Image 1 (cartoon, rainbow, N blue to C red):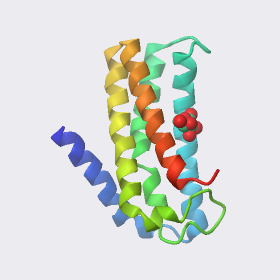
Image 2 (cartoon, rainbow, N blue to C red; image 1 turned 120 degrees about the vertical axis):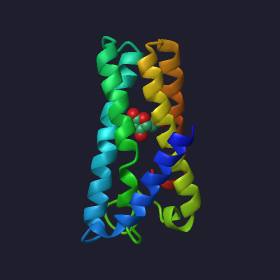
Image 3 (cartoon, helix red, strand yellow; image 1 turned 135 degrees about the vertical axis):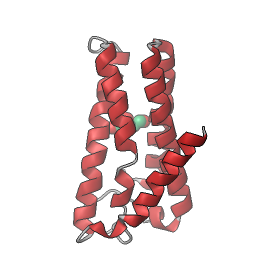
Image 4 (cartoon, rainbow, N blue to C red; image 1 turned 90 degrees about the horizontal axis):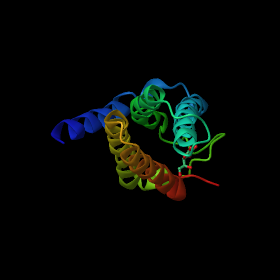
Length: 148
Ligand code: ASC
């Protein structure tokens, strides 16, 4: 648990350190959209396996879960100040309610870690549960901070 918190904290700190990496809003927006696109791809593929829309493959499922975990810490650096302006669905509330946004980002990161553990356990029921929790944390943030 301590290790998890440390990793999450490190992730959020690097977000601040790297915040000035981008030249402009649009570069930051494209960067975070690319990360979210990869998360969506990996997540949807797990969903298809869990729903029986494609054959379940344990090795592939673990790869997908690990990918989501690795990607889960990456989008946040793209939310630079002022980047609600541009080709984005991000609401300005992200910057007005920064603590809430960070909290939701952390919850997602923690759920992604649990999803990897569940995947490695080989227990389908545990995978479904962890997958559901992770999806919930995606949706919870979208509900508050993404324009529909
Ligand atoms: C996905 C995807 C999302 C989440 C969300 C979960 O596959 O692209 O944004 O799951 O719909 O509720």
